[in-house]
Amino acid sequence: MIEAIGARTLWAMHPDALCDLLAQLTITAKLPDSVKALATMMGGAKDAKASADPIREGSTLVVPVQGPTSPKGSYGGTSTERLTQIVLEAGDDPKIGAIVLSIMSPGGLVFGNAEVGDAIYSVRAKKPIIGVASPYAFSAAHWIGTQCSAFFASTSGEVGSVGVRGGHVDISGFEDKIGMKTTLIASSPEKIAGHPYGPLSEEDRAEMQADIDACNQTFVAAIARGRGIPAADVPKIHGEGRTFSAAKAAQLGITDGVMTLREVIAKYGSSRNRLGLMRRRAEIQGMAAAI
Image 1 (spheres, rainbow, N blue to C red):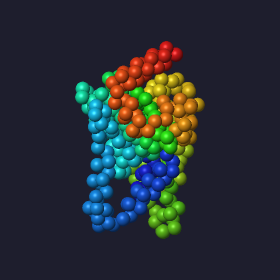
Image 2: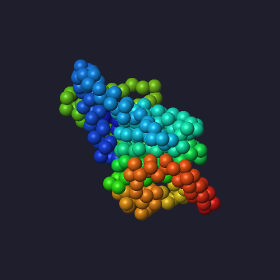
Image 3: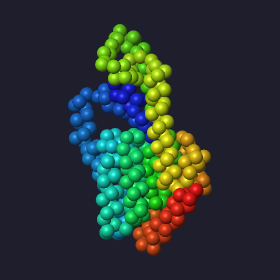
């Protein structure tokens, strides 16, 4: 069952958006193939791809980060593999003076997020890369935004929802009601750990919790690196699941201020402002390293 697979996967995503996504995946899985084919013919996949294409604004490259994030863009959102490639290529392109990530994402899979975050962080040593929550950047998208040279939220925007989530679905009760029983046979108990055909064992639960905690530590470390703050301060500033309005995020230092996408593009279209941002970020990183 697709909802069981989704529940066991590690997500860095706003909880409401994740519930909606898992529900949609369950419904889609139950649709006849003919209906799925008709939906594809009507252009849904084409529209999703077009929305992810970068746009040149003078010497600035504007890169949309929209919808759920995953390595292949499997949920109609942003492919972190493609985003990584775009960012690295733009970093090496002498014709591009700045990169702006236009973010409208609830977050997504943990898979692929560290890689795109590392790419963004490496490129910002070469040229400014600015993230804008336009209007929201939650969880994995917040992770991405904090790796930029600067991170802003639009006037009505929100950021946050830091944390990692997994889960387990026990469908044994459902099988009992329909007179069905699944028996799994495996080479080792580890091969079927956390299976959905019975309650989650305490041992499997502890292992899942350890995986989630480890992923969250990576998340926190990335925010600390990107924002130039001690890892111990990340939960106090960025929260552990809360979301923040644009004004509150700027006040707390979660972001660098309240600016719309248009304002960011206009400001960092100036080579003088780009140089100033690079210098300020270098100073902040230097102070953080000295702590």
